[in-house]
Image: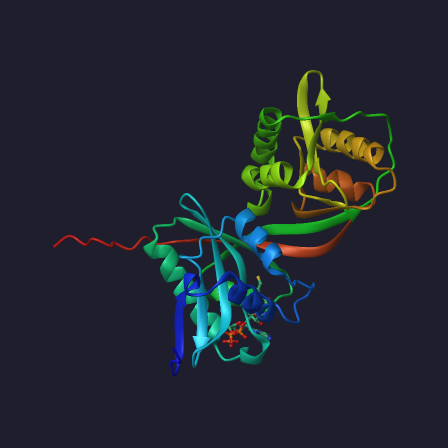
Length: 285
Ligand SMILES: CC(C)(COP(=O)(O)OP(=O)(O)OC[C@H]1O[C@@H](n2cnc3c(N)ncnc32)[C@H](O)[C@@H]1OP(=O)(O)O)[C@@H](O)C(=O)NCCC(=O)NCCS
């Protein structure tokens, strides 16, 4: 149907093919190239636990021109993608879309919603105006490491990984993309392997290594000494690899150890959160 004017509708009104095409238009001219085919888009939806009924699309005169993808885990939410097609930017559409999305989160009863935004992205101001607060900085780290001493990593099963992930999360909260279910998805569906290093009998650091390439889906350490042992172990796993780790909180034990050994922060992001005021859907008479 061709409607005149602006409308915000659930993403379930569109096919995956339409949403993939809209996603690519929404990310045109972005800081880093993000172009998905339908398969990669589906993988993104799965990993971020996107609820399409909760996600929103903004259309002008019947033409979809902006997308907001809402991930959901229990009462926590995640903005798993947001953008306006280049042809329609600077007309206030992002502001309307984020407001409509916030209303949808509120109606759905979510308590808190997280997002990450590249520090220099104008969207940072948009989210701030929508009520998101800035929590901390996150870095994309890149570095190749020389082993300082021989540290052997051991493969971890799901239970061991869950235990060390929980211990590291207590030191440095993981972002949505590095929460345990997403990490297990990388292991179970894409052949990544979890490796741990020990101190005595305790596993004190871990890395999840991809089957190919240099992007670690996740890694963590309970303290800086454990992080150094992990870097020694990684150096031995695939010597010469320039490892890349996304969403590492600035100043975490792993951040400090990696940067002390020459890793560079190549992209800085801001971790933001919105606390949702609940709406009373059944007001008392
Ligand atoms: C960032 C983006 C969503 C803004 O969409 P938009 O529809 O142009 O934004 P709006 O017109 O609603 O502007 C809302 C506010 O955002 C900020 N803003 C948006 N674009 C801006 C720009 N180019 N320069 C400076 N501020 C800008 C301003 O604070 C603006 O408020 P103002 O008009 O009162 O100054 C859009 O540029 C985009 O899709 N970019 C590519 C994808 C992306 O970066 N997504 C965010 C990922 S976290």
